[in-house]
Length: 227
Image 1 (cartoon, rainbow, N blue to C red):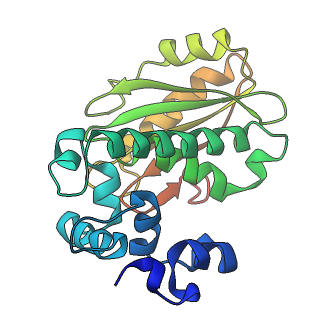
Image 2 (tube, one colour):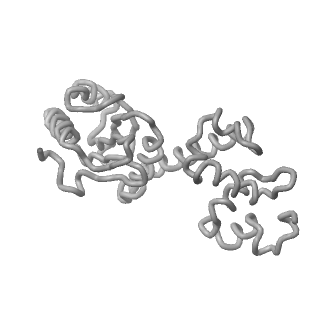
Image 3 (spheres, one colour):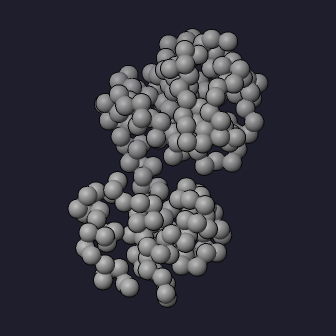
């Protein structure tokens, strides 16, 4: 039976318009993105099959072009459409942080950092450079690879802070292991950079650790400047 033959309240598009996107299952949301099914499968059936094959929505969204296009019902056109949707989402989160009240919402900061860092297979240390009103000026990835206090250079951080005339910074990096707990090395890096930025009167507001489904704030843990 085609989706158009379903009761109106069960069709994904109609359900979204009536109840909102949050009311839809992963399969229903994916079906709207797919738009059409394949021979013998509605878009919802195809979406369910794909979620099973990818072991969930996240793995599908994080798939490489080769992995994505290898599955029946997908291809380069849908891959490019998906990447465009994901990038629009990242830009929407970024613009939220550029508003005067953007950093009043810790969840908005965490969501933005998750979109930037969670999917990366290696560690990346980044800075959110902020103005006097704590609005986002620039997001800057700085250091890559296995991070410790010796591999994060205060000189480079200071250079980017001065370049963008930032008044405050938030540090962030990911743990590809998925465990977001701050390490002793993370605490040492934070202290080292905080002391360097004090010399130019720039505030360090927080250091976020991005894991798999969790983002930990070192400020909330009382770990800023403590070893």
